[in-house]
Image (cartoon, rainbow, N blue to C red):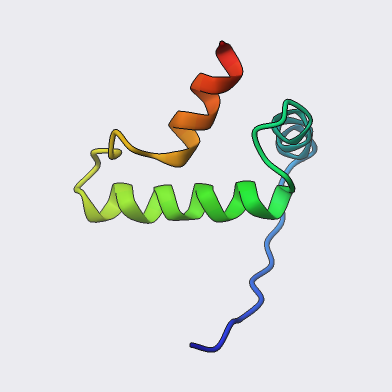
Length: 66
């Protein structure tokens, strides 16, 4: 499988949120967060709008709340 680079623009507030998630210890990098978010988005579309209960983003946000 050949890897490809994908780029996109985000708002300053989104960058701030990503940095907060990284600083909270939920993610090692913004790239990891983006990969998880994209995987969750694809899973949500695949499951007809239902986010799987084992979603990594949901799991990491719950850890952050503890």
